[in-house]
Image (cartoon, rainbow over all chains, first blue to last red; front, side):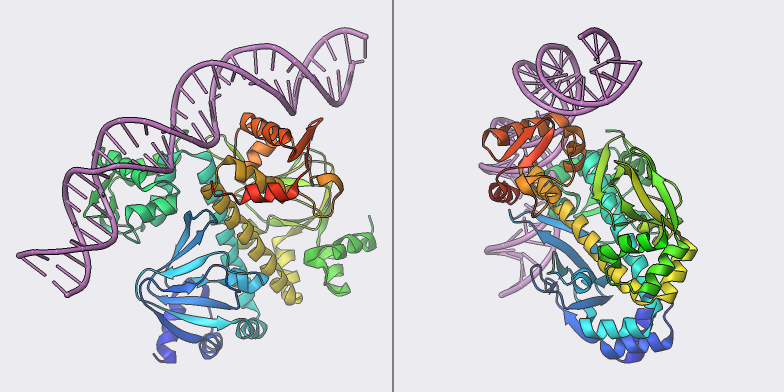
Length: 228
Length: 228
DNA sequence: GCTTAAATGTGACAATAGTCACTTTGTGTA
DNA sequence: TACACAAAGTGACTATTGTCACATTTAAGC
């Protein structure tokens, strides 16, 4: 893949949308192009974190395995997303794994390369700060939702988080299995199944051939903020 | 309070530990000194976020009220901590409130002043990035703990988070009431009470005149990572 | 198309933690 | 010191959700 193509991909997405040519060139020059198969671990929990990834194509899952074996899915990443910046910045180990959920390409940037880029292009730091701020906000909202709401509203929230705004027929960004949905929403697979079936009865969602669709966005939003 | 004194306070603490004189002077010059009584809301959920706070003395609680009335305590802040930077950076509204839990002083910095400081002192951004990274890490750990563990291990974790490392007699950073502990650990006051009583029986903690002390740090750590 | 494995659907049961309704104990203040 | 109010302790009950044990369907590879 050529630098130009990479530049196009990078420029399309949030963090790099307003990068000038020099910045993009620098990122590509110092970055390292990597390909992953579905299921590959792009970042591994427990490892020291000496690099950062920029997702170019494909999709990935960020998840942690607790000491008692529970898998917790923190987020799903789309192209353009920066991954693994936490450990890189604070010098700690990886607290989560990132797994490719389909064939995926990414740009790896080492700590030293990253520091050089930041040094050279001073306003990249501010943009990164903005990204991190949003990430903290998402995490806090997740804590709030997990704590304050019962399973119904909670699943509604996670479904809405997966929903694509202008998409036809309430398609989700990713078609997750019910077990995966469970790991994401923090409930058992069986409970996910029962909840989806109930909503399916009421015409709020449809569940066909393993794919969940949101049929009634408004009602689901109401459920997401229900008092219970 | 004079600039010199402020400079001393600022310089003592993490984010500003390695600021040079010019940086400190700039922060103080552009900042605005504010005092709060116990119970005052320093930052209010829902407000637009146009400023940032640096806690100089006292202690504060960051918490959110969910739409169903549940109060969720996200963190307690000590002097030196930066507060309210999320909304300032990403331009959104405040998702949480910050309340003084004792007489408290802080330095307020407006968005424009903050941007000036970042422009002028370029490596402050990197330090802030580090702080934010750690904050995301904490939030993720909180999600993991809330999700994967039952109330026992969870309370253990939150108590350990409040524990002071070298402190005599397992004192905590803050003496929280059992209801507050409940809002922090995500369990009901009654359940907190029962759990503490049980641990008290076993000599793991002591509960005297409303103050919790950790007597057996090792055992509590084990509980925090228990398989259940 | 057949065989296997993975994903889904469902009932019965258990367990964890919340809620309610009090009592009891502190604490601060007039 | 007495009063008032907040915090803590406790029993009984309930609710929500997880777990286990299967049946059933779907998908994928040979």
